[in-house]
Every structure is written in C-alpha cells, then in structure tokens.
Image (tube, rainbow, N blue to C red; front, side, top):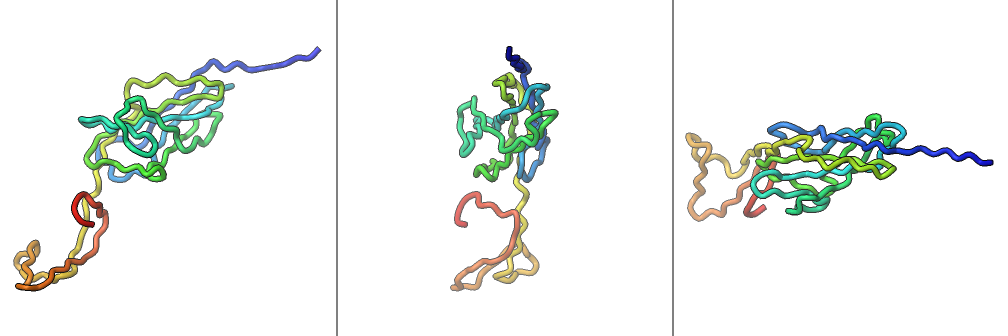
Length: 178
C-alpha cells in the first residue's frame, strides 16, 4: 500500500503597484509593487499594464507603445515566490522605454501563482502618476556676452560665422538639430 499526498491550491494571488505615484515625477528608474499568495500557493508571475492615460491612450507592450488596450508585460523580478508578501520590480530603461513629457500614466498589476490561478483583471489602476521632465540647465560659454545690459540676447559681428557652445544637464532633444 502506497500513500500519496498532494496539496490543492484554489487561492487567487493578489498584487498592487505601489511606485511611483503622485504628480511631478521627474525620473523613473523602476516601477515596483507587491504580490502575495496565501500558503500553500507560490507566486509564478506578475504582469503590469502601463497606460499613457491622456487623450489618446497608449499602452507599453514591452518594447514599444501600442493602442491595444489589453496589453500586459511580465515584470523583471519577484524577490520571494512564496509571496508573503513579495516585492516585484520592472526596470523601464532596460526595455528601451521612453516617457512622454507632461503626461499622466496609470499602472495596473495582476499576479499568477504556480497552480495557474490568475488574479482578476483590475478595473481601476493601482496607482497613477504624472511625468514631467526636469527643466534643462544650460550655460552658454561662447560667444561671450556682447550686450551686458541684455544677457539674454546676442548680436554677432557682421560677417562672422556663429558657433555656440556651452554646458548643460537634463538636456533632451525635442525637435531640430542635436
């Protein structure tokens, strides 16, 4: 006589996106949240939906933006598959993600456990945030200021070739020549 034991997992895992949130977010290096599955369950995967929620909604598809609403991407890591609770992370820069300036975003998450139990698709976002690129900080070194009373203006000498050089940080090309 042989006895076999097995465990049945009928519990659905839960998850929540927690970072970033709020207004005026100027840098996004990681998206993160929590996920949990009651014992004996074990987390298998967490998926997120990143929605650009302004007028013409777009969704992150893992390597580009799409207009397909039911688009989910798997997170990069889950720190504890026993999920009591676990922390999940997604690193947007490692996927080539760019954020649209002055735009609102919604972040949703849903988890799946090793038994295949899938969290219900959320109706509302876990968190929302607005992204604003930091202002550029520039200093023009050349040509020197020729109108000391008007430091915001420069008038080149007649017939000169104009070269502008300087330094700055938080510089992003938005249009024109780089």
